[in-house]
Amino acid sequence: MSDELTCQQLIAFLDEYSSGEQAPEVRAEFERHLSGCPQCVDYLRTYQATVAIVRGACGEPDVAPPADAPEELIQAILQARRADER
Amino acid sequence: MTTTAAETDAFLASLRAGSADASERFVRAHAARALAVARRFLPNESDAHEAAQDAFLSFFQSLDRFRGGASLGTWLHRIVVNAALMKLRARRRRPEVRLEDLLPRYDDAGHRADVQPPWQKTADEILSDAELRQRIHERIAELPEDYRNVLMLRDIEGLSTSAAAEQLGATAGAVKTRLHRARQALRSLLEQDLA
Image (cartoon, rainbow over all chains, first blue to last red; front, side, top):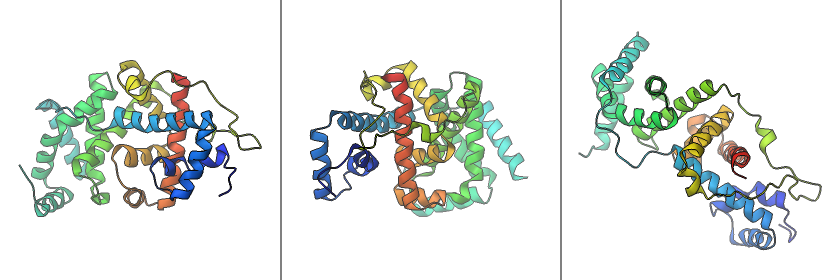
């Protein structure tokens, strides 16, 4: 990879940079670009924030759910399951 | 209570064979959590019930595609999230976005041509704002299905690239490309709300 890594090249492989998959010499090229490009630093920050937001907004909840679901919901699910099996 | 791998395999075989007893045990064990997850996306109680019910049906229908790599509960969780997102999108009447419109644009020198002002909040601040959280759910629901599925499997369910590829019948390269594009597109959608 040349010394003149562009923003486009960096962003194309941002997932690999972000997950630490790159070889050390490639990572060094990325860090050299980032040290002089605040726009790519901001893009990287918001890209990583997006991943964290998805996990936080949709991941499995840490807290225990209520012990029981409404019986009517359980029966509706089981009835739909039986109808689907036929 | 601990469960051995052999017990888990036997239970899975019973579910796949359509055992009414195994189905009921599974529903009773997981319905409360599934409903709690659906409620996070859908303020309307009857929508949350419908999403949970749709999710269990999809779960039972897709058991033959379950290859391990995550627990049955985690597999169900992802299906509940997807069912809730679909219900949300139907309620908001928002179409899927065109992914290509949401990827970064560059000038001839490879510099970005579409730089927006920085986001004003951190991920933690965004997640602790109930209104923004709801907006995030709506934005994820707008992603095209192929991309949303990869995002779910990799970033929510936490499957490896190869496990996600196997589940989707895609190559590992395709999964990596789709995931990166999905994250970039969602980043652009969120930027419209946050910059």
